[in-house]
Each structure stands twice: as C-alpha cells, then as structure tokens.
Image (cartoon, rainbow, N blue to C red; front, side):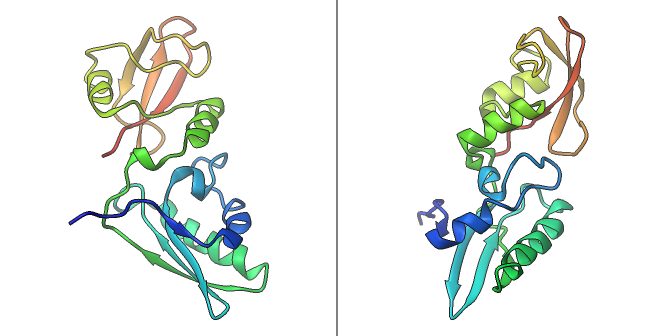
Amino acid sequence: MTVDLAPHIDKHLLPVLRKVSDPEIPVLTVLDLGVIREAVEENGKVYIKLTPTYSGCPAMDVIGDDLKAAFKAIGKEAEIDLVLSPAWSTDWISEEGKRKMEAYGIAPPLEESADKAALLGNKKLVKCTNCGSTNTRLVSQFGSTACKALFQCNDCEEPFDYFKCLK
C-alpha cells in the first residue's frame, strides 16, 4: 500500500496557515515544519490534520490552539485532528524552513546516516550556526528539547542546537 505524503491544503487557507508558528522555533511556520497534513474547508468549517514531530510533543497542543485562534480571527471555526500515521519525518521540513532554522541558530537535520555518525561522535558534520565551521563536537544527545542535540563549535566555542534527523 502506498501512502501519499503530499499534504492536501486548500489554497485559500494558506495565508492563515502561514501566520501560525511553531512555539519552540518561532521563525518556523507550521507549513515550514511540515506538520500540516491536510487543511480543507467544508461548509464554512476548517478541518486540519496535524502530525506531531515527536510522540508526546508538548508543542502540538499549543499549535492546535494557535490554529483555532488564527481561523477564529477571520470568522472561521477550525477542528484539529492529530494524525500519528504516517509518522512525521524531518524530510517534511521545507528547504525554506531549514534556512530559517539555521539563521535562527539551530543546525538543520542532516540526512539519516550522517545524523547517526554526528550523534555518535564519529564524524564532524554538524555545521556551527555562528561561524559555519564543521569543527564541532557533541556536548549532549539532548538540547533545549528532545528533538535537538547540543553541540559546541571548537573554533568559535559557541554552543548551538542541532535538530536531529527523524525518519
């Protein structure tokens, strides 16, 4: 069975969705993060399917409330449905989202095998968001949230978060 991973979003809902940010990384919209799997309007009501980045992610409740508030502000009711399958992947983060993440000071996820090598300390692959050096080291498997690891640059000595790859 093939699963269609492309989100289905009614185009006229995009301006509102672009206003809702991730509470943990506020420079990212829910569209940048790729957590909106569906957003359709039927009979004046907006139905949104939202996939959490991590199981039990505390930001999902806030995102759901923020989506409802954003649509309420334009006179529409929104219903949020959490969808767990297929599971969210860092592949769903947009390229624009990855650029925004890096500019914000969080190194975007590497591809799966590079991620494992970096998190096991086998290779210096995670780029410092301050100076751009890959002469970095893992400080902790967990950063400011469970989805991030804490790294430090050996050149400029600045600490920074790395958003771990999830497939």
